Image (cartoon, rainbow, N blue to C red; front, side):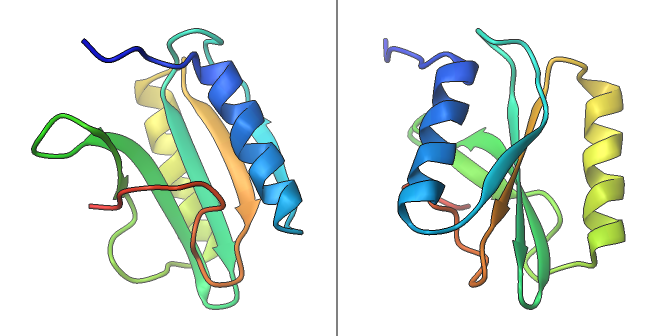
Length: 110
């Protein structure tokens, strides 16, 4: 069984990586510090993308483009986040300045 990193620790790590890359990041919503899910809102030049935690076919941690393959407007991204938070009140929401719409952390994106 693979060890799981607590959500609060993972969020701190991701924010630090963004800072090291020279980009800003901030927690928009704190969720459960131990086992809350995480949504990453990437704001870039071409719009926004929301990444949601998932697993790949082998069960490894991965990310899914919750808002689809193409960037969406800020309003569409915010509406997606709002819907997900209503379904899961333990969610963390972290916003990253990502000009190229790539996360600052290593990620398998499905």
